[in-house]
Image (cartoon, rainbow, N blue to C red; front, side, top):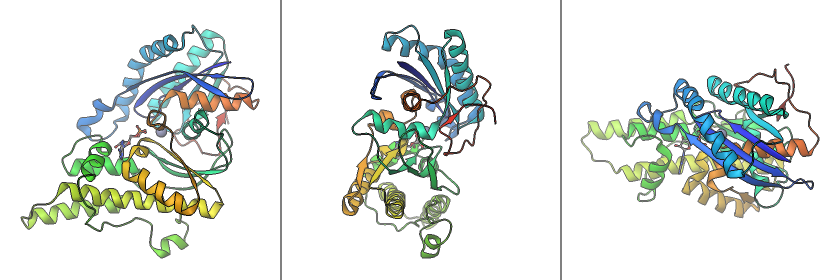
Length: 350
Ligand code: KG4
Ligand code: ZN
């Protein structure tokens, strides 16, 4: 059975195609992605209206490229992200998916974007066991407890303010390094030393005892970097941008990995899955590997193209659900910008 997945929750327009075998294994047939990232560059972050329009313009080409890559005229099912994500962006992808499903006369599956990030784990290597997923991108920062791909997940924590990638983008902007911030800060950090002790949000003993034990906060860190730069300017001191980047990055990687491993310990999970664009970060990967090894936890990081938003992850999640006998969604189901992680698939209007 051939399943096509459409992703459009943020700034990537993705169409992915997978083949589901009788034994439940999936194979990637096509992975076509267009990004409107450069169109947002001068604003320093994703502009929802620009993203929606870009999805509309890119969809036909991305679809044609995927069908051509897979060598098929039509799939046996169409899936799309119906949430969470940006309202207009979700609407474009979900509407396109329903229209394609209706025109091809095949079933439609409206699935959860975050479930998709987890589903890619099953495309490479062993089936994902009980695990903790740390999803970090420009749009989300989530610690999820996963029983298995396609099963409802439990959110242990998320960010109270900025997403991890958003913190990178904002700090990059204030250092005059452009957008997106992650790759350039990562590169500069490699040439610096983490000499500045920036704050670790939501990590004090009282935070860890309270309801925000597994939550994140990056806005204090961002402000702290801004104050550091302002103070140096006022005092006429030259700062090392490399050291500022390395110190900021250390604070982010430290908090993300400490909280992820604490979640593993609290739940007894022996596997940690990384996903989202920030999973590309060199220091995050290094520190996660070190701390996982010390804790006896297996670290799974899918290859980078599958970590960032794409259509394959949506097709992969739908494939798992179909394999387990899930019913298709009504074409009347809507999109939900705040779709809960407990809902992998939306089958009918609530
Ligand atoms: O998953 P993604 O491509 O798109 C969404 O946000 O949905 O993630 C993009 C985010 C941006 O905020 C970018 O700055 C960040 O991922 N990013 C990184 C790195 N590469 C991309 N952050 C830290 N280190 C990196 N190497
Ligand atoms: Zn995502």
